[in-house]
Image 1: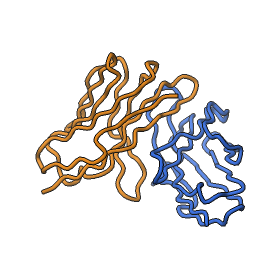
Image 2: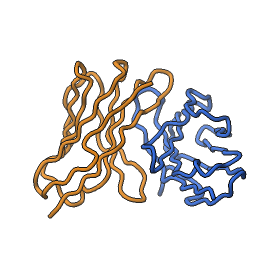
Image 3: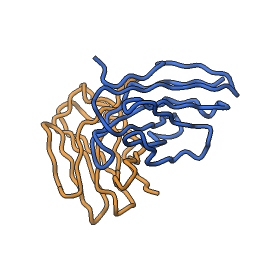
Image 4: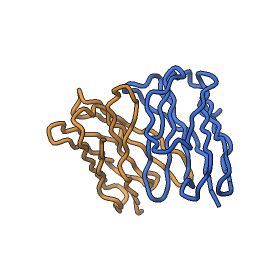
Length: 113
Length: 113
């Protein structure tokens, strides 16, 4: 059974629209993360959360907003989508935020037309 | 912020030989260095990691070396097999109130029979 679930697996959106990427982990971890991977950039850190509190935000745009309704959930809301937002978004988790192994979910591939 | 350089970008080896991937980092505060393997269309999978209190770590055919003075670390795969063909990423993390991992640009490893 997958321990980190990301929904949907594929997502197509039009420029200017808003989407929410879902992530749930069943590893009992306390820290969760979002990374982005595109053809232009390698795996790029976006956010980290620990016990549902934001630890770090490395995104330059407020269009990206993480949302944590439960300790094992960390969704990513993206507003005013642009074609440059096209990428695979990976959710990851670790036992704790400090120097613990991070495990990646299967990813959501977002295409913005 | 931290920058991680990874070389080579493409590595072709014969089955049964060794493969080596080298990474360097800038931030002397970095103290956690994981390696991930990613196959096409899949998520990155943690294969081995090393912390700054170690110089060498081995898991089966995988060897990681860390030279803190030179700010370099490397992955060595001994007795390569076609199944080792994939993209490999190195990363560096400080753990300091963030959990952020900074990734290299990746190395495509091709193991030829």
